[in-house]
Image 1 (cartoon, rainbow, N blue to C red):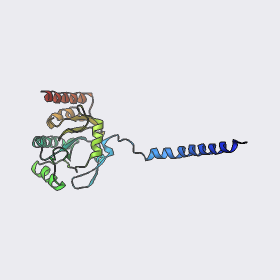
Image 2: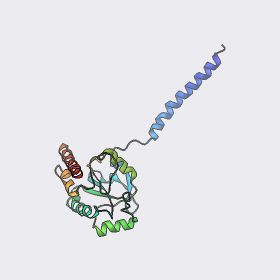
Image 3: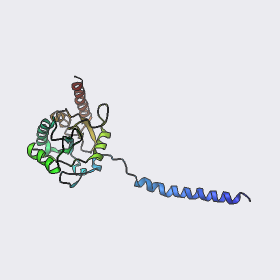
Image 4: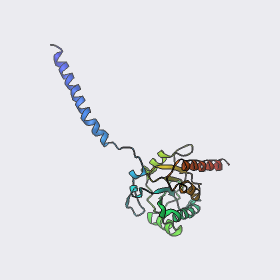
Length: 212
């Protein structure tokens, strides 16, 4: 009889804890953000500050590029990106350009200045977005890491995304946009094993050029 009261209270405490875990843990799981499965899970802002769900591009092949106006790679990349866009824009292809001021402050302008530079000076007709895209780029890096480290190393790093919103390849800043054309043009952007092989060959070529 001496232990009956303490045992009863201990039992009630454990019973209450069991009920709390049963009802609160599923709720907590529901509240936790599920890992993103494709770029369609993200919403970004365009250069005018408007929200753009990337699900708007569902069913298209995408080339996502971090651009800069004052980089040594700027002119050649914009020129070739324009060629690529003009050739494939009516065939389910889109280029998404994200201004980047991270490297040597080579994209310091306001949204209006960036748009003026990209669209007037470099004649870009593809969509230009705002600079702040950390969640999207965190996902891109997690899907396709870089050489040695996953961090973006410089302007004009390129991510190729298939029609299902999956990142299929990452290209270094020095990879020519026109060289990437081979990777998505052969199989009508279906990204089978052949595309992956070609993409890896291009990456190997990049590595050899760095070593050389």
